Image (spheres, rainbow, N blue to C red):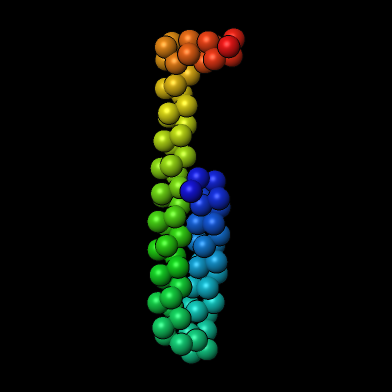
Length: 82
């Protein structure tokens, strides 16, 4: 999850967009089931982007909370001096 998930989810969305465009331009050249598979990949890409974004937001939030908490900062300082 995180950055790799966000990147692969974005790639899935781009590839699904290209495939949908090709299908719309020439639908008789493709099996109708292939559009269903493209839509499934698109949905999986959306889910991947959303989950990866939530994970990244959580880590950013946890980092900000940890470094703005005086008790945590004191523990970090004490670990550095040991």
